[in-house]
Image (tube, rainbow, N blue to C red; front, side, top):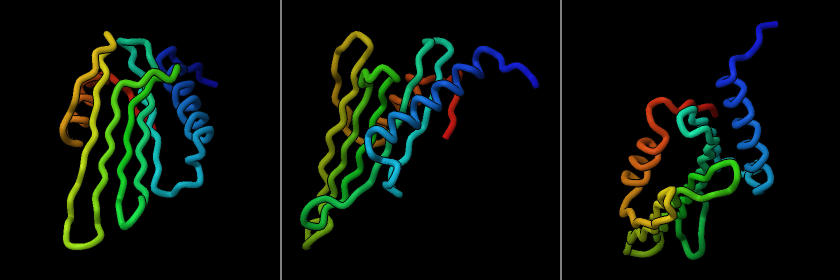
Length: 129
């Protein structure tokens, strides 16, 4: 049996932690929810990206995305609430990025959230679903 390289071992552990936390959050039975693990060799951290879409109250569609590390520290949150009922197709967005220093920054769109996640994880970050 081939022995796994240290980076591969970290990615495998990261994926297992992500799946366990996903299950602990009760999202295993949610067909619209997903989890992706990213192990950053540079930062030596396991990141977990959660995505969920669900129906809110009174005809709303809610998109909830977050990026945390395996220890539970939050790095970014994105929530979009779209009102699908009536004539108004209004969407409200709450987007917050938390730097490693603890400083919190507002972002204004899912595109900004995605850019932060990709930039933060870097091209060297490994992904697995």
